[in-house]
Image (cartoon, rainbow, N blue to C red; front, side, top):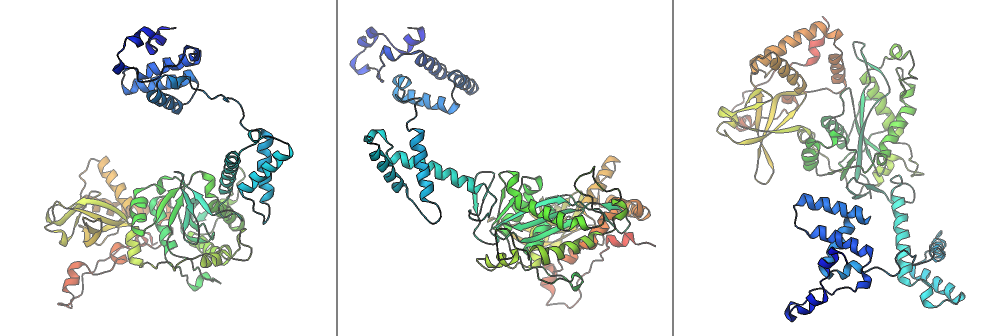
Length: 577
């Protein structure tokens, strides 16, 4: 016996010399059971029970798994058995190890019997399958121990049924005859029982060149939201901006509110879908994992965000993009196609549509064609009809102002002296923040115009209460986007100049003068102007034109008109002389 064996198994003299009250804790195995495999396990146990630090223990455990040819989990179970039973646990093996406990013939008979008994409208239970097994065994004159017991039959059928259901769930959600289910990245199942249960969202860059008002060509981005139950398109966002949480928020704004369009769209039907989802199901893009979406919008509107388990789970949205490309885009002037090598040479020459033109085409296609069409799963029901029929309760109708505030981005800042706040190197002031120096407040802002912030007090219970509007000093009559401000800040920083409201205002005026001279050559500004024609951007002061707290208190005492802010729009900066 090796030295290791002597350490694990004391001699008979050692055992007999011990006192009765000091008898060994575990029963010892006989020498005939100490095989080479057992000795190898003994060496492994010895290495794992020797004192060491955590990192060394992890290394030893991996080495033990490689030595025995098993998993780490098996090593942990072996160590646990040794701690509970002693060395006898290392010698225990199954007598039928490596042998099949049921023949392939019996297993095939059990599964085929169950399949045939559940064809069409027939339904056979597991017990009835076992009765067939007993009947066959009697025909073959087999004793009880030579054919499967009812526990074995149940175990085989349970495994078969579970595997069958798993394959059904892996099919396209909503496929005829299968359950409507989405599986998330963390393994949860989202049951789809009706309309607005699950919304899916995704982006794509459209294969069509658009011309802005100056003739510059660019491909737009499209963000869509589709209801998984009905495949009805709930809302979209079209623009030149790359995907971001703000773009998702704008698409949600369009999907949540009821939609109405003017007579210029010449619609035959109404776009009647609206509401909010229970679950928001997306891919793992950075814009869908942002704090703005997960912790602000989703929490305040009361829905949960989940990521797809794999890319193929987003087939509903991807199928819409393909349908849109085949039925609409390829018929438009300026269509580029998805293959760069096969792109027509006359694309730039033919491109003449603007963003507003394409938006009108998309609205007409979605309202009068796509939502009115029947899906492959619905033989006699349109998508919009299935959405209406699938509603369990009437969708909640949000106030436009409240929803707009909810979708705005949020930040937190500490109030300074005299009711001032610093945000992105701008100084803001609000009268109702005086005396609150040192308090942390929540700011809501519109990235398209940050000259005015909405300030909220955060309560202990997590709720917020509106305090006041904070206006950027010296910029009250201007309109400045967050993107433009960051560009100005970078230039001032690179030039080693002091960053304050005056320097920002001066830099902004210089930039606007330069843009006015170079407008026809500035591609980025041209895109912005065209996008604002389709998606008009109001200043915060106009968008949230409600009395400020100070005005609300004095409305009953004075009939003097409230202060008005002169708003200058970017469109005016590009007008031709």
